[in-house]
Structures are given as structure tokens and as C-alpha cells.
Image (cartoon, rainbow, N blue to C red; front, top):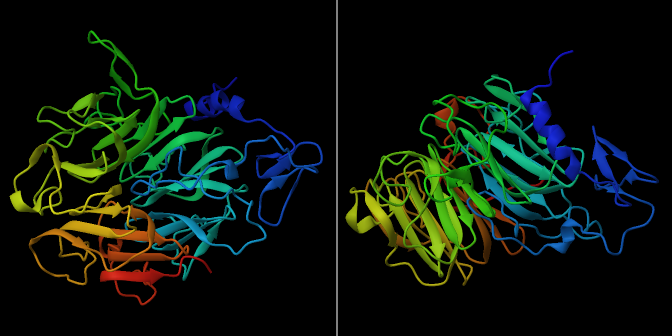
Amino acid sequence: MQRPSAAALFVTALASALACSSYGCVYENRCVGDGVSRGVDGKCRGAEAMDGGVDAGDFDAGDFDAGDFDAGDFDAGAGDDAGAAEKVVQVAAGAAHVCVRTNMGRLFCRGSNLDGQLGTGGIGPRDGPVLVDLGSGVLSIAGNHTTVCAQTEAPAVYCWGGNSNGHVGDGTTAPQVTTPAMIGSASTAALASSFANTCFTGLAGGTVCWGRNDVGQLGYETGGADVGVPGMQVETDRGGGVRGPLESVSAITIADRHACFIVGSSMYCVGGNAHAQLGAPGPQSSLALQVPGLTGVTSIATAAEHTCAVAGSNVYCWGGNEHGECDPSTAPADVTAPTEVTGLPAGALQVVTSMDSSCALLDTNDVWCWGWRLHGGIGDGMAGLDAPSPPSQVLISSVEALSASFVWLTCALDINGDVSCWGEDAISLLAATEPTRVFSDGVSLHASPVTVAALP
């Protein structure tokens, strides 16, 4: 008898979280349960709705974190607005693509498809937004490079796209996974995917990560080997040098070689630390370490070499600072401890980070950015200047949420459900000849926000 794969065992272990009710559930793209059928919105419905049931609509509009998802990131439920106009309620910006979730629980992606990030089953270019059918209403999306992940109400987690380090999680070594692969059949409290790693947190608070682990960024020891399926839980020091699971995680953000988590009102980081991006100078760590000096943390973001957080409505950044992405006044010196960003108005709600810049959403619904202007990441209409920029207001208003790619693209969702992006879609990093770009005008770089057609 063939022994089940690690991926199969993981899915089996999580399957107990799947429960069918009069709302119905999805198994192998079928609605199952007595009297259950699929509606025009793609949601499985029973003959009678449960008055006391828990549905996606029971959650409030979320605070999106750098394209990642935490437990508060639900808006109107998937399918609950079937009688209303469809609009975007979440954005995940990739290196050269953008994916959006709508109030109808549908998922659309547009832009580059060189790693299969549009989920079409191939890598050919596609003009305009493409519907990604996951067989069930989509509750959240994540991914800020070329890998995309989504949580559906089945419940299930799907990932697809770039798989260079096995971080799609289907157990293959294929460089691209072009058809969404089901990674787990459970609900998540937090979900994130980036350049070479993916993590999600179950509702009980335990977090599993997979993908590249050359500097311990998965939060457990593998001898530097990649992990191609969801692995062990992220660990921390439980006292006395004893390793144990990092529990009660509510948000995740992943960079190149480090990842960070919100636990209660504190922040923990793990992995590479060449620029003190874990919050203090020191060696790399396969144990999640608490970032010193931060309390009341509500939003977190990581980039290749720097990290930022909102704590007490103020923004703090640390790590690599070559282009002023942490502190423009001290560039290019590293910032080795959480340092408040000066010149930024008070009232920060969210922070996001790209390769060489950072941005904050304020409680006035305005956006401010700082760092390198060269790729248009400041969003104030100025580009091409190879010099650090202090915090400057982006030429946009009425913003509800931000998402930033691992490279140079930042996108905003406004109160009307419209999506605007600025910076560079980095298509040249993937293949300079591909005709499909994020921006409808075919231009790769925009130094001020441009509306992106996110829906057909």
C-alpha cells in the first residue's frame, strides 16, 4: 500500500474543519449536502438559509496589510451582495500583476502570466482581467510577487503561480503551477505569500510556513533545505531555551528572507537579519523573535531588507535603508532598531512596503510614501530621481486599503471600489517582451496613481 504524501496527510488533518450545513459546502468542485446547489454567484446554498449561521458577511470590512490577510479582513460576504453592483473589496498587488476580490466572492487577476499567476492553466498572456474560478466564494487573497493564494468559503486554501522554491505548496518542483492547487481544507485567520515563501494561520492560531528556508525564515530547522508542502509550525522561545509553537498569530507578512507576525499587540520576526530587519542587530534566527520596543501593533509590512509597523497610530521602520525606505534623513545607513518615521502626519492605519519605498494609509483616507523615487514609488508625480524622498502625499484620496508588491508596484482601493496603482509593474524583471502589463496603456511606470480596470 502506497504511503500518503505529506501534502495528503496535511489536507486530511485539516479536513475536520470542513462542516456542511444548510449553506452547503464544496468538495471537488461540487456542492454537497441535502438540498444544496450552486447559485449564479458560485456560492453553495441550501433550500433554507440558517438564521444563526456564521457567514462571511458576519465580518466587518478589513484592514488589509501589504496584500496579506488577517482575521479582520472580511468585507461583505461572498455572494451576500448578489442583488447589488459588483465591486472590488480587496486588492493584492504582485510584481507585474494585480488580483482583486469582489463583494460577490469572485476573484479576477490581470497583468503578467509568465508564472501562471492568472490561474488559467497556462502561461500565455491574457488581455484584461481574468476570472479565477475556485469553485466556491473567495474570502481573501494574498501574494505580492508571482505566487497567488486565496481562501475560499468551502473552506479551502488554494495557491498557484511561481513555484521556484516549492512555495505553492503542492509538493511539486515545477517552476510554475498554472492551475490553482488546493493546499488545505480549512479556514485561515491569516494568509500570506511572497517571493519564495507562503504561510497561513489556522483559526486556532498555529502558523505553518513552507518554501525557501536557507536562513531559517520558515521558523523551524531544515538544514537549509526548501520545504515543498505546508510544514511544521513556526516556533519561538517558550522560555528557558525551549522551542515551541508561535501561537495566537493574527497577521503575517513575508519578505525575501524574513517574515513577521502580529501576536496580540506585539510583533515577532524570523529569518535573515543582515540589515537588522528582525528589529535588532544579530545573527539570522529560525526562532521567531519579539521585536523590542513595540506595543500596540496593528499593521505590519516587510520588504527585501526592511520592515515597518504601525504601533499606536505611528509608523516605525527598521532594517536596510539604502534609499531612505526607513529613514530618508539617514540613508544609506541601516536603521538597527524600530524608529518612528518623521515628517509623516499622525493617524496611521496601515503600512505597506516595496523594494525601495514605504507607504502609509492615514485615518484621513490619504496616503503618504517615502523612499526611492526612481521607480515612481512615491506616487507624487515625480520619478527618475535617484535620491531619497521624505514622506510625501500621494496624488490620491478616499483610500480604504493599500497593497504593495515585493518589487515596485503599489495599489490603492478607494471607497467606491476603484483600484489605482503607481510605481513600476516590473515586467522587465520577468520578460521584457511580454505585451500584457498591469496598466491598460501598456506603459510600465507611472509616477502618480492611474486607475486600473480590475473587473471586466
